[in-house]
Image (cartoon, rainbow, N blue to C red):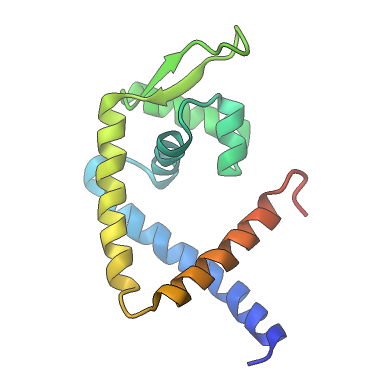
Length: 147
């Protein structure tokens, strides 16, 4: 395959892979009464620490209103806690509660196991190359003022 064909193949595969991952995540979350977007927010807070709604929206590439709705839902489920924002008195930050941290750790462990099974036949070099390519695409499309 030539370079142009490889690039087209990568971009053509991203959508079905995304939908497959989304469907697998939905299935895993059914018994936990958690949606895939809520799961994403929990993971973001686990990895990044306490965040404001605008920070979460930017990191998750969603509208602020949607991020606010997710925060409100997760707070109602007692998976998040508010804390004062030292940078801005009127804008709280949100962090994982103990139960939120336990839940997302459990979900991520299950997902990691499934992904490891799915990719067990790939070499370390192949996995590294795939991660670099996807990281490059994410950086390009998540840049401020995305193209």
